Image (cartoon, rainbow, N blue to C red; front, side):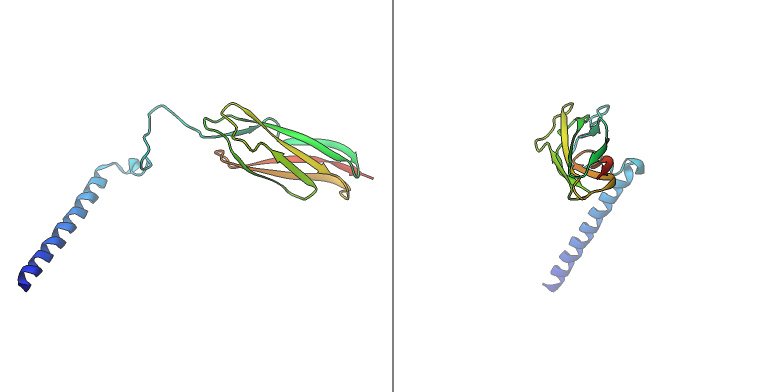
Length: 154
């Protein structure tokens, strides 16, 4: 009885080892440069390029010139989704608390425009100013940097 069990176990091990070799042989038949190119569960259609969402800013820098201390400066940065999928902005963050951003919370369809409104409070901010606003989205380039520049005088 023990011998039958040992023979059966040996056959199982032999069969499972041979199956592993067949899978390795199938992978080896595919040229190396083509292995791993197609994600599992996705179909690639030749000639169709999908770039996803793409955020293209009309002008990524705004110079507000010279303002008196205590004044508020407002500016709207306009951008377009030049991609093929809806653009979703997940976060807009300013480099300091004196700058407050507001942005489109709804998905922006391909070809549609969106806005990022920035309000800069110049109170206590004397001298040359350069505020950086970072827009985080699902675009192919996930972070877009906007600049707000100017000078605050007394």
